[in-house]
Structure formats: C-alpha cells, structure tokens
Length: 369
Image (spheres, rainbow, N blue to C red):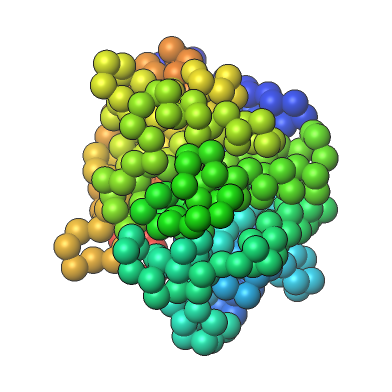
C-alpha cells in the first residue's frame, strides 16, 4: 500500500458504506441550461465515480422555493423532468461503485431581483440583508420560513426516492441558512434572532424536517463554514465553548456528518490547538466530519483581483493531510478543484501516481470534462 493508504480505508456510517475516504466537494458549474440537468451532467459525475471517488456531493441544487436560485443555469432538485435525470446520475454513479448525495441549496439574500427564470422575485433573507447593515432584500415572514423548511424536506424526500445514498444541506458560505447563523445578516427580534441558539433555530428546523422526511437511517450531512463570501474573515464562533453551543443543537436535530468548509484545511481553528475546523467539530460532537480546503493544491480558491472564477493552482503535497487523517482528526476528505482537473484523482493518488496529476486551470470550468 502507498503512504496515502489512510485515504483508501473503507468508511461506514450506518447503512452508508464507502470504499474510501475521498469525497468530491460540491462545486457550482452553471452548465445546466434551463435549470435542468442533462446527460452531460450524468457523465460528469459518472467519471468521478469511475475515477475512484468514495462519495460524491453534487453541485448545489436549488430546492423548490420561488427565491431559492440566484445564478444562471444551475440545476434544480424538483420537478419530474429534473428528478428523472438526477435518478440517472445516481444510477450511473452506483454502476461505477460510487456513492452520491445531492446538495440542497437556497441562496437567500444572494439572489438579486431579475435573475431568471423567476424574474422580479427579490432575494429572501432573515433581515432583508445580503451584507450586514444594508436592507435591500425581502424580510422573511414566519410563513416564508415554514415554506423553506418544507422545501428542504421535500428535497430530502426526493433524494431518497431517486436512489441517492445521503443528502447534504448547504448551510455555509453566506447563503440563506448561513445568513440566519450569522449575526451580521440576522438582526431579527423574534425566536430566530439574537442569541446563538436562536440564530441556529431555523437550520435545526430544516434538519429536523429533513430527518422526518427520510427516516432515521438515511444520512444527512450539513455543510457549514465560519467564512462568508460576503466577508472571508467572518466568524460565527470565537471559542471552542461557543462552537459547542452552536453545534450541539444541530447534532441533536439530526445531522449525521458535518462538512466543515475552510479555505485552507491546514489552518488551526483556535489558538492553542492545531485542530482544524473539522477536527474541533468531531471532538465536540463525536460525529464524523469532512475536511475541505485546497486539498492537493498550493493556493485557495479565492479569485484573483478582477476575476470571478476559482483561482488557478498547482498540485501540492498531501503529506500533512494524510498525517491529520491518520491521527483521526477528521474522517473524510473533500477535494474540489483538483478533482475538476483530474476525474481520476482518487485512483491516481491510490496508485501513487501523484506526478500524473495535472494542475487546476480556469478554462476547465468551461465544460463538464
């Protein structure tokens, strides 16, 4: 076995059995015209499964709510035509021996009125803000909150019905769920605002509704982050004690796996410990965690000045990642841009052929290669 063997040990969580610890990170591609996935999407995910990836998270897929989408040509996860293609995706991945979960997404205040196909519908946000202090979006009512909770539950139910192996709830990066978490964009004075517990209430309701929809044995992952696309230095919590207060209700609501998004996986989360965000989350909750953030590359994804796409990066050593995985700091490793560049990233790493990996280049985003 290679010195990367820790990545290729099997992983089991209840009925979810993975061949290895490699995960494809969810990455928005904007390549589903009319918000409908197509055969090219099926092939894109099939290739990553054939390339040895243990678990695939799809790109963000919009739930069935009028304001869920904020970007052109992203796929939706509702409607008979769309779900039929998503079932083909799941079947294709399974035929290659892989496992797959859709990521359910609502962009919240990141939506701008005029985004098609919903047109003049404004973005929905807890306090009408997509950035702190600027109210220029729809302030969500209790009915709006209930509608979105139901939309996520519907998506989770459909994921199970389509044959997916798990479901991921997108609670990171300054989108709707994270806008409730973040005090900067959540200035509500009802039971969804104020304290850390109150700001987490909406997401706990989403998780619990998804759990009710899929039953006790279907894995639910939650992706969350400290950083926001609106503020890369933002933090939800500053201490391990606050992190425990934040995570415990989510864990109790039904999260099985925490997908802990960092820009650079090797950065410690709190002073006095080398543990990263996934390490701390696992220590506190006892639940499996996924680390992510520039795995296999020498630079994070933040676009260069004047750019809007992921930053280009060269291949990099996996030694520190492997050491942390061997130390059981986290359980699974999500790979993003490196897996866009190399559909067979997992197999190449398994076989010790890291010299055969190619760097990430932005032109790779132009097609579902």
